[in-house]
Image (tube, one colour):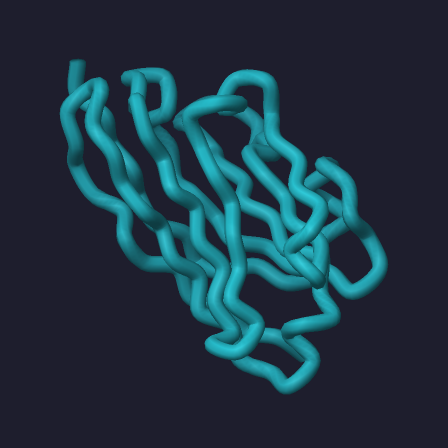
Length: 123
């Protein structure tokens, strides 16, 4: 069992940066594939970025490639999402998710979720 708590969201101007953090509890955190998802009002939850349990393999949605960076620190049970060059279309609630078996981009396959943190980008 893993519990996830996101933080770091807020209001930022277009072109600015934010770093989201996800704190995980549970001794097996280091064995979980972790992902960041987002959901804007009226839209389906979408994959943003994912990272393998070793941190060596990462994946990104095309819309954020080159602007966002996912990382993890297994010693601290933390996952991060560095977001640079933010755009108004990045406005959404951002969720941290984890799974011990699945490592893809389909949100329904992830077993564990945080409560989300709001990111608002003003243009």
